[in-house]
Amino acid sequence: MLKEFRDFIAKGNLIEIAVAFIVALAFAAVVASFVADIVTPIIAAIFGQPDFSGLKIDIGESAITYGNFLNALITFLIVAFVMFLIVKAYNRVTQPKAATTKSCPFCQTDIAIGATRCPNCTSQLEGAPA
Image 1 (cartoon, rainbow, N blue to C red):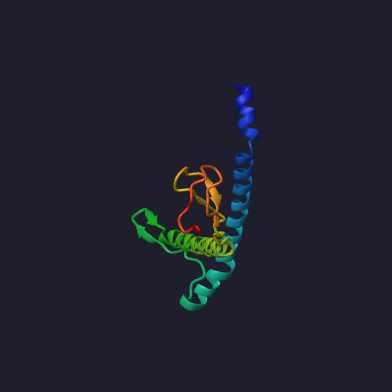
Image 2 (tube, rainbow, N blue to C red):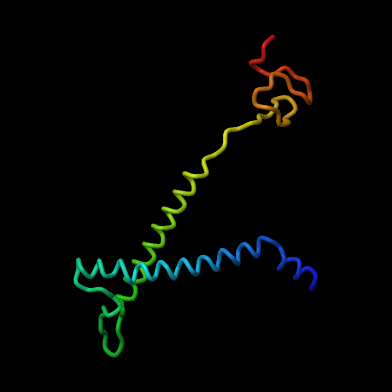
């Protein structure tokens, strides 16, 4: 059982996930700073309040601090938008590559895209010169 656990820990996927998690934490700190230091001052210039955490509704002895929720919501929307932009840029950079093979309709093996005869089953392919 210990050997299986050691093999699990040593697998590349787990290490990649750990690295991604650490990078995500660093990214979250950058986004939190972006929201606190750039976005909320802009909101303050427009609406007159830089931090919403002070907003609350008093109900007897307790309070509903909806300002904290507004701060968290703004942070979430910014993170979601930034992730959207990153995925969109990544998808633009990694366009799908043109196919270099096709499947033989007779034996279902992969053959060159320009092949006129299957090298595996020797079947004449459609569109081949007669």
